[in-house]
Image 1: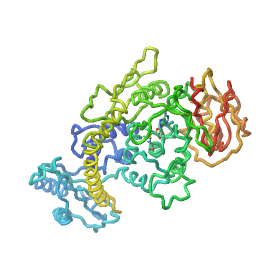
Image 2: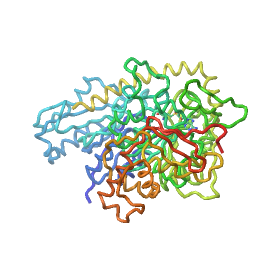
Image 3: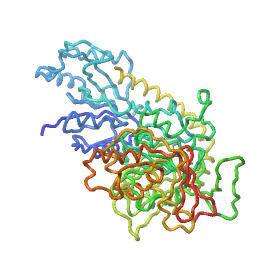
Image 4: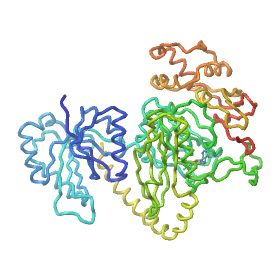
Length: 466
Length: 125
Ligand SMILES: C[S@@+](CC[C@H](N)C(=O)[O-])C[C@H]1O[C@@H](n2cnc3c(N)ncnc32)[C@H](O)[C@@H]1O
């Protein structure tokens, strides 16, 4: 079988999620990957894949990748790259594309990227025997030139340490991140999960067509949207009646949201044309057993309550607790007791040990205080193997980690479970004790994020002009 | 709430309830909406269903179908059959109504299509 070499070119963010994402997608699509170079933190993977179709399918689902490139030249220096390309052109490499309209995209990774510099690079390829015309909007074929200057923006060498040239085979699933933007979403809550991370969860969860996917802490349903986009049939539960009925206080300036009666998770599914994948949401306390005993989900995704922006709670029966009766309210609101993070997680793991299919994946986020973080604190259960543990830094002091587990055996009476993550209340205390410094860093972070976003948008537009 | 969801839910978290399944249904307001047939999904979901409960639930809310109490053996290749199952699972929706615990008669309301299984403090086992 003839195989081809491809360069998978990544966005430089969420690096720790990258390999897990690619491996999970490849496994769902049953695409064998042969590594030409061991995967690293550099913004590319060099792989051999069975066909162009396989590359297209793989990249279409990835939200860490930018695009996939059929590699024509891979050299340590610019002169060598040109020499290699010249020779290959003489041997007819360009032949099939010679008459087509085209464009060349340039990426100078970890270096300034002024338009001038880019044009200069493009002109350096003038020896290539192109006969078609340049079409920046809608070319028949796109080429990608990359100069890599390392990963550290503080030490940028004079010359790139590696250069690539190739034909773009396919774009990634990143446009989905924009499509699902929270800014334009019909219904959001104050803890709605960012679309990219939601999509990453669905990928890492190996959601595939026809799967039954559960989010036991569904909130505004961001994870369900992402799972449905990748073919999952979705169902969610939340303890918050008002949330599921779209009746919580508005979370953003509501000018165009005065009539909020259409706000619901189902409305979001309609907005994103995946309502066919929507099963139901249920108002229920995930701490209690209410599923039929032998129900099996194919994937369980969760962003459990942290107790920072929303209460961690469950229905309680402590005598001392007052019974909350809201006047004029159509439903009874049971009083709730605090539900510790480790308890939530252990309950979630016990639940999943019974209700997740064998080899199915369970994913959830945990907040960590970075100084105290220690692998050994993370949850374990004898039915699960920890596949991934990806950090997303929030502030100097705090982060959250996405834990990815695979169910490796069916439950038995002898199963054990432990979780020793510093409790939510401790976390909350620390989070707020460091508040002052935090506010500062958060401000800076925000500015930085905004800047990154701008750069990123600019890059993306560059990549996706049609 | 769809019949698929009904098939998966129980009231066993109620104090004193042993099985809590199947929940009885009172459908006050039923909506039929079109939903794209996904063969892969229907094939995968059938083995997850309690078949008898599913067929009875459809009858209980007044949906006629010729599906019998026994699941046919070679349903995987029978598109007509799968489509009937799909219709009852995904296209029939109870907008307002009740789910009722078979052992205690505790009522769980369904409003705006969303069932509410929350318990009061003193009902938790
Ligand atoms: C971090 S939020 C989830 C946000 C969600 N991923 C989204 O995108 O909107 C956690 C949710 O868990 C819910 N919750 C808290 N305790 C719960 C419990 N015991 N059972 C079910 N849901 C609970 C809260 O109401 C909240 O909506």
